[in-house]
Image 1 (cartoon, rainbow, N blue to C red):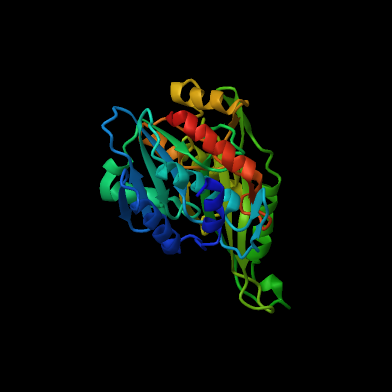
Image 2 (cartoon, rainbow, N blue to C red):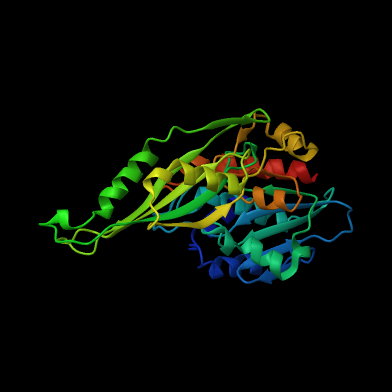
Length: 348
């Protein structure tokens, strides 16, 4: 079985966030048959470790879950299209193939297949593993195998999600002057967010571009009633030169004049950013192996989690990150094989 063969099998298994049991069962079953691996199951997370006594250990990490969807699967000789193909079952296939390989390595390896990465960070399977037995995640360095087109993507932006609930007063739609239309207030806030000019920050020779978007809007109870509330969810991706608290403070100040005392402001989730750490020897080695200039990681990844734990980490994996979460998501054989080669070189 090659990594490319594993891709098709993994894509065929539905694994939307919180429904990863079937794919975790599959991965656990395949890994448990390998005598050279210690395999541990924690919930719907599977950890496979080589234990040779090497003084060095590398973690290779990939999430099992996908966003919701029902994308038609199409398999050709050099491309597999389907939900999760790029994000990130192409990389999971390489991890599975590498874990089952018995060739000599220059370090011990921990392969982490974890659940619930695509939803709120507090629900992450990686944090579930750490709470159950942090020693399972001990490593000197980590590869987070997110889709990068097999390019080193350094650090990651923070991910802040805030719900703002604007208040109004109900009235009959024929007599709006008797109330206050919260949806109209919401329109002002949405316009403010839409007018945001992305802030750009260069760190360690790569450029991060912050983003600010309205991702959900909810208002109104009936077609003849002036809405007395408007709930707006805002997503902010912030550069690594800001701590989480700084990002929250900045966003609050950006919309401060549109939010009144009677309104509600709730931080739903805030995952920290991670600096590029380009001078780290391990990360610079990965950059050199890819043979192309590195880039900043646009989205949030668990590079930030490993960075918090004091473990140097880098994003590199199969799949085009621009295809992630799209209905036409696919991964190519070239990417899968190239990522396999990079991982093999790291371990050789």
